[in-house]
Image (cartoon, rainbow, N blue to C red; front, side):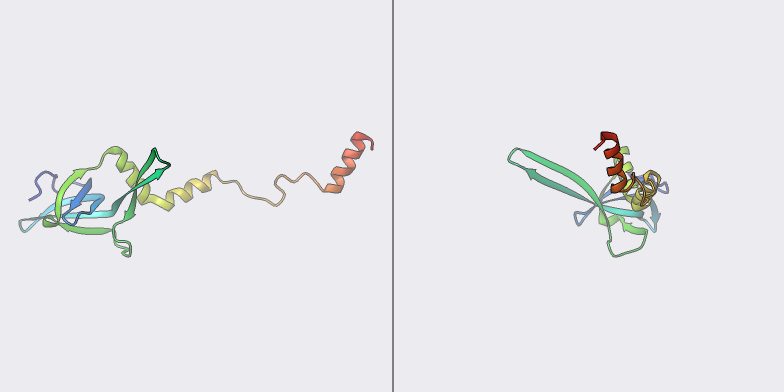
Length: 141
């Protein structure tokens, strides 16, 4: 029994599975016929990237990907026997996770708030012949 996670309370969890995967998501652990089941909402898997830049510099990053790429399900059930350990997410990871889940919705909303309408006449000062006539008049050519 997973006794180090509060049962029947939602939490942001990181689950290390017996197959080696690390899965993050909102979770609720519950008891069912003597076995703990974890209901996982919007699970994502963690992908670490390391890239060498030159001979002395290394860049490391972490990203998320939808856990089951081809599924449109939001909830999954993990059985206790498939989980090695459970940990809670740090505040920083929760923010990154929520930003990933909200994804395009948040990005498109922020972009629409910061975008100006593009008009054909934006920055238009006049025709070339009009500018030439004005310059000739100014410089008396």
